[in-house]
Image (cartoon, rainbow, N blue to C red; front, top):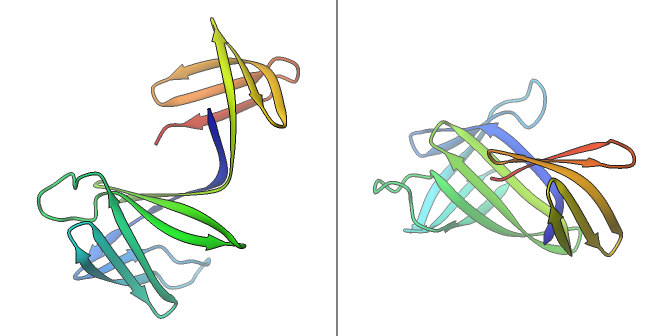
Length: 151
């Protein structure tokens, strides 16, 4: 198994003319506006006064019109570490940004509704429940729950 700690940010988005519009970065601030430039079928660049971001599409476009809808990646450096940020643009006007800060590798076994997880700093037995794309893990000793979603 692979486990990533990181940022999960959901924001609304819209396109007006050739600009990507995102909510304000600060409370009461102005909307964030980015000029969109297509660099090819599966490459996109957005620019603002703050800088530019280049994205690469993952998989095929869900529509033939060349829209921004779909999954995109950006290679970036954060605190000296190379990470791959994922942008999932949904047709309903929502953007999900996923940025993994650290990856941990391990293994698991399951039996019934119990899950045994082994990683470098973790060896636990937990109850699990899977509903739709949501996983809930309950620590058998503390009862603490952790919730996960598949994106």
